[in-house]
Image (cartoon, rainbow, N blue to C red; front, side):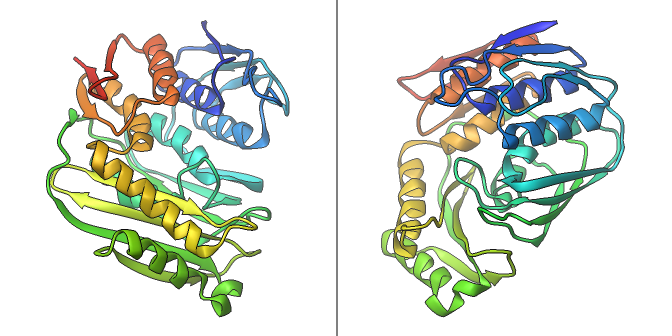
Length: 328
């Protein structure tokens, strides 16, 4: 059984570990989960991703409870079974998908995943449309996502359907983003915020920083107020993104500015944004080779590399000065 000390990391370690466990059929034991955090142990949002991956491979899971600092994940066989994932809170669907999409790469035929509840826009998590607009196109991933209803904190209540398709493994090399072709965006807010023009205010603030961005404004059905904006730059060799969400006490203008600042930083400093770099690592490992230049090397990236190397016979090289991640 592979053993991982999760003290110095967050939920990312757990998500990657169970995803790689399901993919490789290697059991894993994670101790000291989030041990350095003020409130250590598993939170609801971590449990939902673990449980979803467990269903996909018929895993035996020990220690799956709120606050648990030790988890054993003993995978069964990955099977092409349709899944229903229920998230009773506003937990991040993006984080569930982050874990769930990795083992689906090895399936031999598509499966349908229905997600009921949770949030499509969350703090410290990719918005669900990020997968469709950024990650999947970079990977050449043909999986499909349909957002039936958006969800925001604190009630969630989203409804999302995913058709997860096998991934045709390919070499990933993105060290030059190429010429910026077009910058697009999606500014979304709950219908109740339409009178305050929240979606328009977010997009206009973003355009003050990135004037050539083409941003669509949309008001959506949701159980409570909420908003978010995703910007993405379609380049010759890559797609880079920046996002931000609305929060109490945070103006729509600041939400739009934050997303634009994030994208501007990544465009100026890397060939892929650092969040995407983190998510590309398992796919690079599966392909057996790859090279990417990111906007910055984060602790998330370093811990993710360490976890992946425990499951697959690969060795990443990180050049912090050049912000390069190599696998050969």
